[in-house]
Image (cartoon, rainbow, N blue to C red; front, side):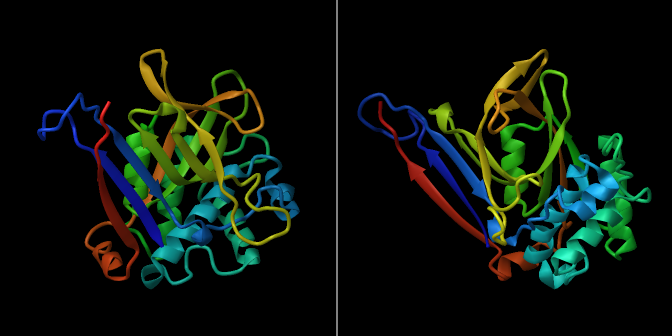
Length: 264
């Protein structure tokens, strides 16, 4: 199930310790990968309708698999069904003009995602879900999204001209003293599985906070390329309180707090 670890180093001066202390803050949060879907946007049944531009609805099917599984007592199997064919049907439904309005020519407009999801959930009988768009989210916002048991889609765009992409956020790691190990992980609808094996595959990329004009963005190289990308936005779906309280009793959250002191 959901698990996350928060490691906080003791800051200098808070406790009488010998030598010069250097504060270290390590944040690590991850969803359970096995709860995600592994629908491939290159499936011929999807490309026939959406061409190469089906990443947004397909990554939502994979994210909503997690959301449905971790909140099964709330949704049952209403969000995406239970079979791979159900996932394809859901993908094509979400992509339709009533919801995301995805086309083979232009893909999905970011402006269509929140209202499209609101309409989709409302039609399924779940009108009260919280759906938010975070513009240029920080690593800390992504961490908080994972902690809140959300379904989170990341909208990735290149710094240079090119086509954007959408993926399902699964994990993030951030270390205040060693930026080389900062990374986030996701399920990529272009590469959601390993070979013909069922089950989702995790893609992990190092990231850096990059000043892009007046904005600070989460930047990275797209796997297998030298193309610089950044996270343009994240779309987050959560169950409003007090429904989430029930998840604590179901063991959906495990919290470990570790205090670490690092002495220079």
